[in-house]
Length: 289
Image 1 (cartoon, helix red, strand yellow):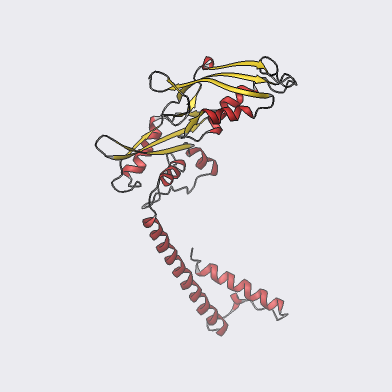
Image 2: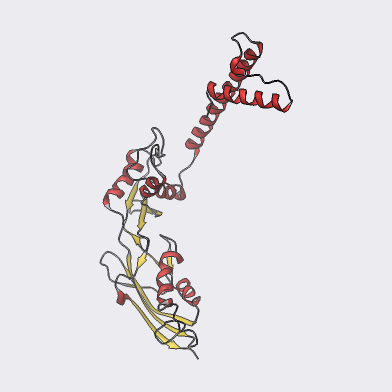
């Protein structure tokens, strides 16, 4: 941003006094120069030249930024980033897709970013019409959560009514409850580390296997990505004391549909999965050897 004449004069004066001091020259205060002092006139010429250069740089930067904004092609990742940076209840800087954070604290800004997960899927209907399905979710500190209708409506308004989305783009914004997952495990364990209830013998953790199974749904798979039974098994294999984890049965559902058996992978309609009921996760332990 171009500096003002006052700022440039202060910089010039400070540098002038500093350089004279380094050279052991007598003190000379530029603020005491007369209106027609030749050094004052030279300073003003240099300052106005610097001001012109600052303004030219600003104009060039604005032109480059405008060009980049116009040339930046919307991609799947571009839309996902905009969702993650969406600020509920905040105004936009006029003519841009950026939010105006003037006067807000860092905490205000962070709290306004309620979307913690986003996934965009390109879909095609029976009439060959392509649209974008945007899945978003929040996080309550423990689980992924469904966002309320107000947030969803605001995001839709941001993309479609404020012309942030690409021209002609058709979008559907959704935040849904999690798909329901059921698992049945047989875990062969090292009896020197775990007991028959799956607890660590040293008393440091009573549910290490259960935690690993559930944590995989939070950190082991990407939001909107595939649930993979092999990757899930691999995550449980890393628990100390687990010798052979076997995922005997896996199934999932959404929107009151019948449960679908999972033999390989599953794409959650909501973008994420959860054990809705305690009995949806069954673990049987067997001593290894």
